[in-house]
Image (cartoon, rainbow, N blue to C red; front, side, top):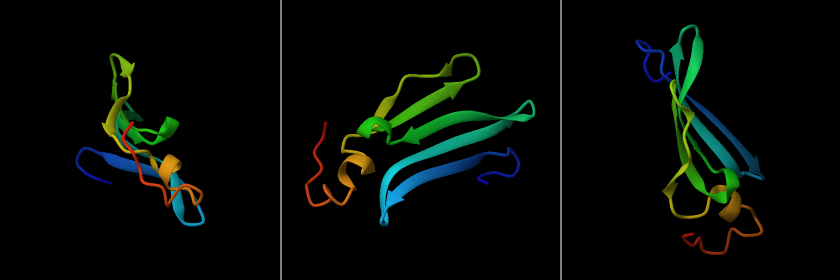
Length: 88
């Protein structure tokens, strides 16, 4: 729980292979009308680090890249770990 007064919390999900993170999602949620409302999602889907904004009026917005190096899925697997990450 980030803030007990507002009910804001982070939900963190990840998968790994032999201790190496290969995918992740960090989701900021707030309660609204008895349900949880997603506010932001940071993830490594599609081999890039993206952020999605969510609003009640428009829903999920297009992804915005927030970090130029490969996601953990692309550079964290044992077969590619020794290769340097390059910006896309």
